[in-house]
Length: 219
Image (spheres, rainbow, N blue to C red):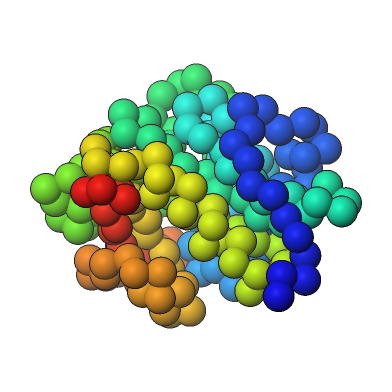
């Protein structure tokens, strides 16, 4: 039985209070993420600005899906999807919504990693894993999070199913993850495992990035 009845929706713009709530939920939900630790240079105070920049960019160029608890209106889950033709932080309009400010707050070492290593190291792996599709012609999941107190209620599954229905016969769903726990989750959701690759970090301790794809409902 679902202990926390919730509803799913697509939002064009979160209110400021919803944005704050979503950022705090992501901080709680990604507490064990190696990637977030690397992307912030281990600076916990920068996790909020990072998630805020990601959400705001998705509001501009992607689609924000949320799950809200019916009884309270609290946000229980969030998914940031970019449809075909859109990519996170691909232009100044997106980057000016918080990413540039976030980068300026990083240590020089971490900022250099963002600028010179992160994208160039990850792109070849993602390109190979998604072939014959590309990140530009798939539905790409940049972030999905369920508040820890509302997990195991099917929220993440349903946030993904909404996009499976939208993808239909024209595209695939794709994502990358960085923990063994999430690998098991996406396999259970019948995503196809496309392999893994080490992502270099500023501290020379690579983290493993795993790629998954799944056809739209009629592909």
